[in-house]
Image 1 (tube, rainbow, N blue to C red):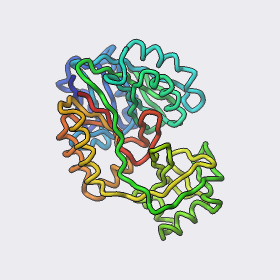
Image 2: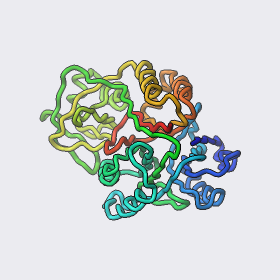
Image 3: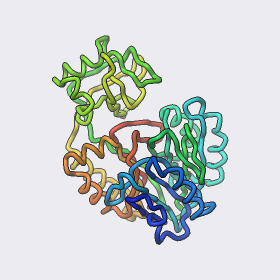
Image 4: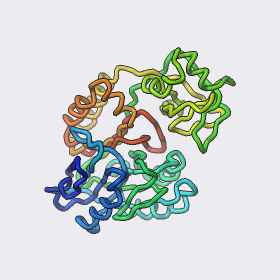
Length: 351
């Protein structure tokens, strides 16, 4: 199989897909102003080709911040695209679509991946989708777009999750998740006074969450929203830790980018040697895949900001491109199987 990445900083979709011939699956990442126009135009340019899209930045060896990027898979894939609607209310209502699509593609854990673009309510969406995928061991990689809407097959859907099931006809696929944080000290917190709908974390071990965070890290209230780049929270999930980014201060509470529930066990995290962690991820992928066709990844917006502020983003993209054709989405949250995480990178590698 092959992966194509095309982009236009001015938002010219025809320019972005120049040279693309006979795609078998399309991923569209556009800006808010032109998104709906690009969805319709992409369908006109490539009628009947499965596609999903969202509002967000894209990249290969450089980042497209406010234009349009298109990733295409071709020459050896079997793919289908669809959408689950009303994800903030009841995504399971549309689960039969996914069940039928999984049967149509007919893949398994060795050769098939699900890529999704979501508008919100990610944790519930992933639980719903993975209830179907896990029966065949199919992994999922994806992320949250902006603007509360996604697209599938030439149509825009508010409050939805667009998904693509992609089977590699000529080799394996495998999903990865990269975490550049580790636990700080032996802090353990029990969350309480949470608001699931607003992603509010009110108290930690019975104390106001804002006060706890400030006292440990010796930061002002104004510094909290950027301190999360270095010190997010983590939720213990078996032998894994799901990263929870802080969005803002709400009175004496902390609003997060991921849902926190009463009685959740949380830890405090700190930034590790991300340059070395990235190198180790690349070494791991090379060990697993001596021959790589392409890599699709989702990098968190906060990782993008952190890497950019430290002059590392361009170097990072160059290092990842050494694996082969690499492209992806800057997301507002990352998906890995049934897990919704923040400040992470998830990716799928195609043999």
